[in-house]
Image 1 (spheres, helix red, strand yellow):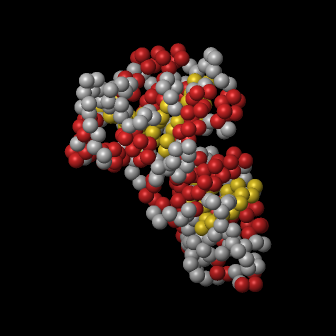
Image 2 (spheres, one colour):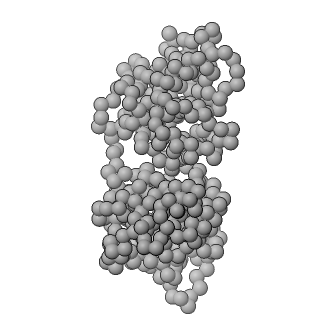
Image 3 (cartoon, helix red, strand yellow):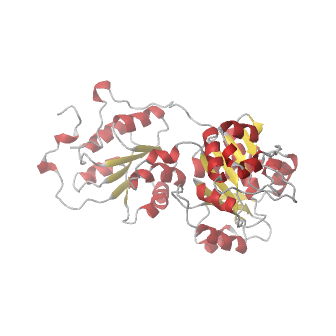
Length: 419
């Protein structure tokens, strides 16, 4: 067997009969992961994607008899020796197959062996999220020239209430607090409303004149300017907001949003922007420049109608998937039920947050995060964080489980070789 991989061991007579190759074939072990995979990728694949229920052993059995797809997604969850199974898979597929792997091991060493050692393009561990799949699998599936560019620098998340009073600012402030304090990511909460913004109040933060200066004179924006303009709330959480006189009329330079967000992305892991949908150039620019839009609605027919209208807006260039829909204040007296909201939207909201007026109201009055208290509100914010950025409360920076490792002499690329 040649040293450069086991793939060349297959002879021409062992290969499946000639024919057109499937563009994308996936073998997924559970229904939830299959549903998320379909929703996150289907819009990017006009030619369709074939998904079969099964794990990597199913894939080996099927691909030993049919043509190799151009892109293969395999599920190694539950497999006792996943690296050995991937080696077996490499013996029944063609050398140029593009392999994406899903599993249940949250282990950095396992990730490195799959991607750097075996040559798989990417590895994601369960539970999957739509954002996670769209960000890390989709660039390889649509064969973007520079798929890594989408994940370099800080991530911009816009929170938009589909109409006034649905609680979007509360969601934005608490999501930023979760990123910056609970998950220990460098985070800035950005409130572009220079007149009536309340994001800073919810976190008991100061406002300043820096934001107005940035919007009027973007040539002055640099990293030092950003550090001085953003006000600290905690070690890794800052707020960028202003409070201008109602009699003033700040101007907005056309390229201000681009330069400001570029500077913020160099400084912070996450930029959480509370962006109401108002007919302002700044707000439209922020929505277009975001990596992920979030729409917040309450359980009312008017909010459901406006949600559908906002979902119909064209996505920005950095948005690989539709907006995340958050149903806030579910259970509010006189509001629609969960089923009625689903019927009105023709879809299930991605995140649901119960109506907790006493908890949220008291936290807002005290300038404290409601997400710090255990309960339904916190659960909803944590789920939203996973949807938009796959950030857990405690982040694992190194693997701790038992992982099968290849011996040094066998560490060779099995996938993605060129003949």
